Length: 242
Image (cartoon, rainbow, N blue to C red):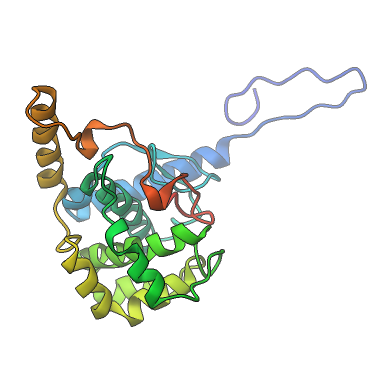
């Protein structure tokens, strides 16, 4: 047996052989898992855990939907992993705020475009597309706000300032913090509603819909399809699908 518990393959007729060693991948997966477990022991993250199913794929991308998936690229230290984890949870937060008929970002999407007409729409300064860049002006703001609740504003901003992707987006969010907060509060995105509250509310609406009392299906009753500003789950430049 070779490392990783995989049987030794037979060589080809010319003596050539390829061995697979998955030990490093397993260690990286366990490292990220253990860091996340430690963070959850140290902090009560349940307020912002809109999905509680997490997959770890070392060497893979990090994204939010259809399952919150963490790679190891944005998990070099606990503060970075915390912000990354909460970033993906904020995608789920917006998903729960919406319905099949309503994207919570759509009412002010054009306002963001008017404010930032020259926003970069490619990595590393922007996101992976036009729509994703403007969506992340919301998601990254929410990420920094949530992260600040656990490690303080200074450390949360330090993580944002040193990100290797979404660089313009993070700079803009931090520079225009209060102006964006006013916009997001006006449209009901903040204060950030807790996961237990929002999930319970969606479940009640879904139950009424099943009983014929409500025609519109809540976000909780639909399959995990991205809203207008997230038509396709993207990897975070490596970082998120989201």
